Length: 335
Ligand code: TRP
Image (tube, rainbow, N blue to C red; front, side, top):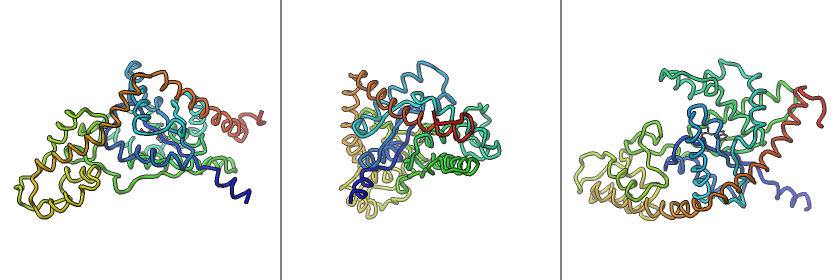
């Protein structure tokens, strides 16, 4: 009985984060962030801002600083609760860089060359810096240093979590001990791909996003700009082809069966469909937007919340690094 009670108390570790390189959009929310909110009760949660990862593409001090604060606000505004979640900055845990070095030494270049993000960058003819090339390894260090069990992320991050898992296995094998937990990604299948206003996957790089905290005006403009076919009001419409409908699925709730029926039978034009979507989107976004505005008035609270979480995350990392140093022969004993 006692053992059962003890086991029940032990929560699995959840860790996730995003890099502060742009404002959050609806695709980020439904693809990943929403899960963190849902899972925060059940898991011991660590949610951080990957500011060192951001440096691979953003080298502007003021921008990095400002956008870090913006993401901090976003995390709290979407409903992550500081009483349940440990928030921190990646840079609060410098041990991660140390671990990344160790991982670099057991990782081959051809293996990293298979990363989608690296291949995309090469395909676009961008000059790839070493940081970008090594991105998956730094991410593996973020995940593995905290003994993470689950990593809820958007579909685009799936491969990165596989890198972390492979790296854990490789390390455990080389050093002949189960030092690292094998992490698992959690990806929401039904919403893995959220369409942007041009119908392609919503993504910063396509410039087709709808901001998560957008004003009513921005939301209206974005929805109105979604291209639709030329079917008349009475005609049946294809729910599989229509971007507006794909977005209804995220925001319509109890209206969805009614909207679906009108699409299938005809009787609703795209203009009306868009008006309904705008109304539903605004009523979803407005409370979060209001909360964010309130939070923004108290930046001290935000900073203190992150400082506190940072101390907790770092303490764990320091402990883990001692074990890792010992088992790699960098130091001989645990003290
Ligand atoms: N790569 C993630 C992004 O693009 C950020 C990130 C860095 C991350 N380290 C992580 C996510 C560890 C989950 C777990 O935003």
